Length: 140
Length: 158
Image 1 (tube, each protein chain N blue to C red):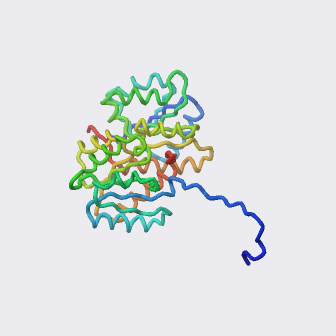
Image 2 (tube, rainbow over the protein chains, first blue to last red):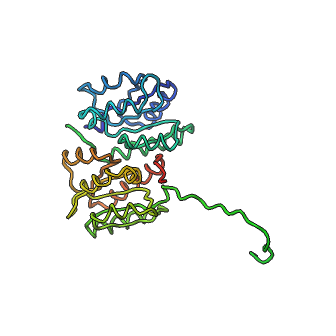
Image 3 (tube, one colour):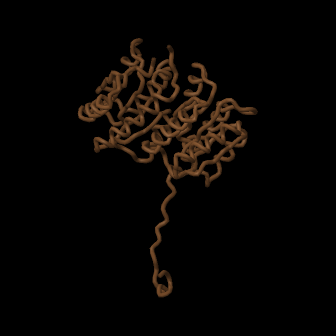
C-alpha cells in the first residue's frame, strides 16, 4: 500500500532535513523517511520501481535546481505525476507570488518551516493524518 | 459609558482585512441528505466559517466568480446530474483567477475506483475523500481537513 510507502524529504539544508525526519520518527509512524539533499538527483530516484512514496515534502529554494523547477519535471512525466501525490512544499519563503506558484504547480499543500518543535509536530501530525484518510492514486 | 464627550475627537479605526481562512466553506452536492449531514458535522466542529451549500453544479462557476465570495475551501461531490464534478472543475481550471480562488479544492464522494481517483488528481486538486455513512468517521475526516488547511499557507484572494 502506498500509505505504508516512503516519506521523501527534498531538502538541501541538512539541519532542516534532519529536524523534519526527527519529528516524523518521533511521532512513531512506520514509514521509512528518506532525505534527498540534491534536487538534481530526485527524478532518477522517483523513477525507481521500488519507490512508492506515501508523501513528498519539498523545499523551494535549493541550489542547482529549485523546488519549482524540479516540480515542473515531475509534472511533465505522466507516470511520476500519479506517483507523487501528495506533493507538499515546505519553505521559509511565503510571499504571495511564491504561494500562488506552488498551487499552480498542482501542490497538495504549502507549509512554512516552523521553529517551535511541538508546533512542528502538531502540523506534521495533521499532514500525515490528512493523507492517511485521503484516497490517492495507487497502482497496487 | 460610551460617546457623549467625544465630539471633536477623531478615532483611528482599523478595519481588519478579510482573510481567506475566515471565508465560507462551500459544499457542492446534489444530494440533499448529504448536504445536511455536511452542514450538521461542520457546525459541530465550531469552525468560525460560514457554510454555503450549493445543490446545482451548473450554477457553481457563476456563484464563485462573484467578487464578494472568498471561499476558505471548496468541497465537491463528483457524481451529479447535468454537469458532474470533473466537468465543473474543468470549467474552473479554464479561469486562472478562479483556480487560485478555489485553493483548496477537495472532492468528497461515494464513487471511488482507482480510475476516478487518478482522474481527480489530474485536475489540480488538494484532496479526495470518501463519504461514509459512519458519522463519527465523517466528522473525524472533516476535522482533519479543517485542521490541515488552517495550518497550511494558501493564496489570499486579491
